[in-house]
Image 1: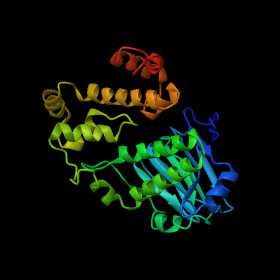
Image 2: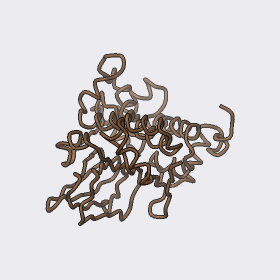
Image 3: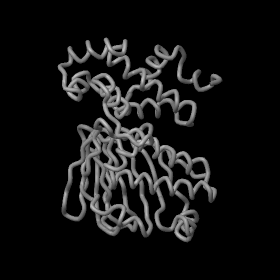
Image 4: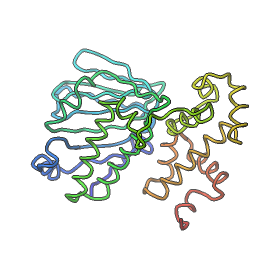
Length: 298
């Protein structure tokens, strides 16, 4: 099994580094040599995160910011990174990157190689935004990342490696071809907001990993906060804040059932910096503590 390192640097972080023997095998395998992962991880609220590589590495580095802000430098050119931005550092180029001191970023990241890496990364060395829209699929993309991570974490069999690298190809394509990814919704129809409440719910689902204010939700759908709250409650039967918390707890239940993430990791992944507050809120909404829910039959 792959070793998942949980060091003391960032509370709730998760990452794994594939052993050199496995990377060598991926490089030789006819199904993976075109595109393969060497390292993959998630850093929540990564205060003081900084990395500089004066000696270039032979891997591309994807960083996808889902919260906070940061920066990076390729050669002598610097870029700012905000929430919902991603970028790919090219292989063979000196670079540095770091988290914003006042607003530390939360990032998903991957190191990858292969003959298809350059064309799939082409043009993505500059920040690209995938901010939620009426037909965005950011939640689908992040779920795909989690599938890749947990497939690799669960074992490094040939089938697991083949499956993970095939999914990663799709993950990269969802970033290189954002419009096509957003419009490929399974039923052949473009997703739309339906009405104001459904548009707000879609926006909530795309932002489960952060805290959204009523003002932000109202601005998204084009209403004043008070009018939005009234119309949302009338349509859904819950206040926007209560409904957003229920969506978060629904996602927490899924992670408790399907992953071995610690409760504090789940809390941080859903935007709760205080795991005790998360536990109290989960207990209030679900009727039992997260630890009890994990042990209960489902």
